[in-house]
Image (tube, rainbow, N blue to C red; front, side, top):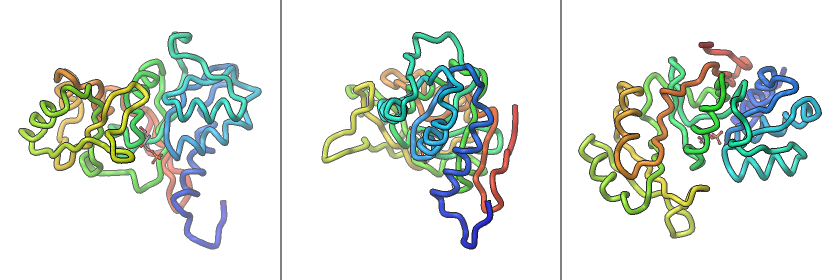
Length: 230
Ligand code: 5RP
């Protein structure tokens, strides 16, 4: 793409959304994430909708968008495996470890990602970090455990806040709450994810290390850069 102005963040998201189509397997079912970057991917996927059987979606929002565009949506329980899952991230490092959940869809995102052989992460270059921890870490929790989990994060140096919407705790698609945790150092994402995931009341921690990205399509001023492949 040639332009006379620097690409906006929105244009970078559209670029990577379009580029992700190369990973969609004709005749298959594609795993679809959540967020503004994925929305660009869904919009691009419309051009291929007659070549795929449909999608498994990671949120009510993505399901509604897919259906509105005429793309069939399968329940995750209807499929045994997926060739590919395509999603954005709030942060990604050079190993493919990510922080996700800015859109509160982290639990379903991890479930759909677990079905897929390959995780293609689509981000603009603002999301690339040397080490995880800049973006407030989303953690989906059972509400009755929120204060206990907040104290456990405080012991690690983190400050947890319940995510709010319209003056009330935001409820996820699963009817649970989100804690956003600042001030953490996530030096070992694999160990951190394993540790926090087993705290009672934690539904899902937004570190995606055990299910890291296999490919990262990074939207840059120079175009789409494929940063690594595992
Ligand atoms: C939603 C997510 C999204 O992938 C993440 O928040 C990035 O979103 P966007 O593409 O809008 O920046 O994890 O739960």
